[in-house]
Length: 362
Image 1 (cartoon, rainbow, N blue to C red):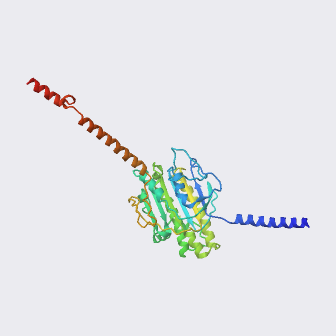
Image 2 (spheres, helix red, strand yellow):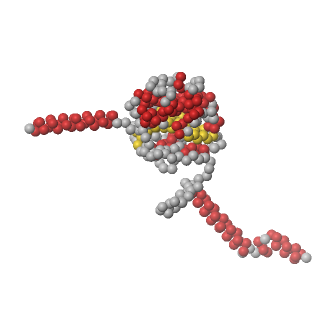
Image 3 (cartoon, rainbow, N blue to C red):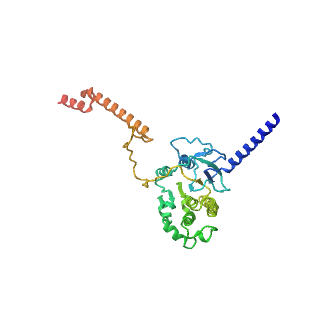
């Protein structure tokens, strides 16, 4: 009787374990993939999850910048102090949790996929290398959102930005429609054209960088942030199991692989190319367009808890400089006033001394 019970429990345990393994293998999550990276930017292979809100700090660290809070993530190791990559290219792909990118440096699971921007990294690049005018490009073709700074205004002035411009570019010579296998994708459907427009933008960016190779030879690091949402529209329209979605996913994977290799080679094998794939963000992103040169006005209006104003990071340094300088000046004024008050004009001043001798001689 006991043998039968043990055998039955063993069979139940085997079935449960098999189901758990199949479930674990079949479930895929959002990912953060490093396509290209130089040797001095060391990414360790592992399954350490990275939070979506920490990606801007991770990009800043790969470019050799400091961040306000330490990033306690073992996937990135500290590199040489006097070596930094010449560019960082971040591509965010919405509508898919992972892409087949076999020639990648490392890939990590992405947790807490909240919307993020590269504004903080762009401000750091602009503040540290304002005289060198680095290239800062943030582009989202589906939302017609473009932000350029520095040399990007001259290099990418011919880059199609609006959907109308990109679709007109698709009908011109040298477009991706004549060189890429479309398979089940249509040239007339709106969602298909949106996806192909984003692929065209990647192709045009590479072509413009090949035309302006001098950008990769300067000493200022460049920053590229691209957001692609064509797959999200295809998944919403056709479904994730449709042939259009599968063909578009395979096509985008091959295009991104080639895009990373081309940009990595243009910057002399000294650039970091990352791809973030996220099925859907947890919260909608509301981004207010503003100039990076405008001053920040910190206001406390609307605070429900009557909180204090937020101070700048350098507040303590400036406060100590002003405080001790005022103390030193105040002590100097006190010492000078004390000496003047107790000074004997006949003995301490050469003017009165000469005057007294002249009076005595007369």
